[in-house]
Image (tube, rainbow, N blue to C red):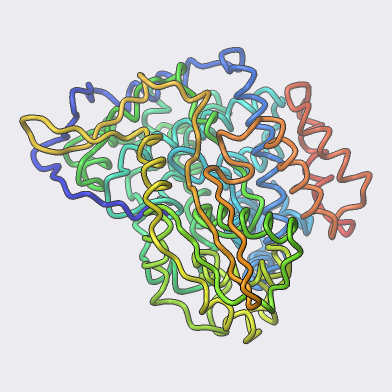
Length: 509
């Protein structure tokens, strides 16, 4: 979650930095209506497959969390129809309830994927998967709907980047993403898609920091809104009309959620693919800590570090990591800290990674959180700003600072960038000091699994994550068959997609 919040003004309309903003909602709807599977670059299709692997893996990991168990038990009690499946338990329920349960589990450990500029998989993958059960369609249709959700959600997030919310707090992206992918799969025309967007964004969500950082209820961030996007498309299909300019209107979404709207985020449709920036977490927790953990575990493998003999750890990172730490600090309560909160703090994660030689779902179980030794070591983890890493992040940022006759402001034009070589720059530098006087250092700019790392590495990360997190619920033959279906989604028919859901469920399902 970004904490950069430059001041600005959106009074009297949208400040555009030279970017045309008229008819943004209409242009978005027209593109969604016209785009075909054949328009997707091959590399984008392959990234979408990685995303499916990563999201389903995070769902399985979340199933065993305390919050995940509560959600599953509660949704079972709601009853409902038999339209879709709760994964991995295998219970059949209504479409909305299945989306709710699955999206909650996929967020339970903050183990989700992300791109510029949204955490999209909770809706892009899981809403599409639920609809595949209910209405049936091909693997090509699946991939197209998924990519459309990625592209639209990322642009919506980017357009309000200079605003009060960021990252997973942008829950409204799941409203519009669910609406767009559902509208495409239901075969809606441009005007109906435009209405679906208008209906979905009628009441955009505004989550509160106290709930997000301070409780395990954070797992519901996407779950509570993703089903509403589907409903918006269904209402539009049946003739309900939504606002035709809900995004760009002076009284619409973007001016309401941004001090300085970045309408250039809506450029480059069909030319610049935000799916190229997909990044896959290999550890539970916020992406801003990932490079620090990469460094810690790399040094541990290289030098056989005994975490119990560490004197101090010094972590230098960029401003996003420091800002996140400042936001979460008031909600840290030692051994009583909610598991969902711990994913945002550098100290605890570095400490348990050193002591346990891993950072997995196990480090977020209540009995592990209560270990005093972890918190004692966490108190000796020191976080400071690393100017080199901060400058690298600024250099690679798609949002640029401009100084002209209007003063200093920000600009973004996605129609003028090339994302094929984009790097997700969340760099960190780590120095571990031992009690015997030795010290070890490492640095890394892009997280393992992040955009900018080699594709083969990211594919391997996604596959390994799937195998690692499903091994407790799936037999090996089911696990490998599920991976095979995902890696060949473009060849799948509706029966294969329904088989995929069954393959991802435990033996009881």
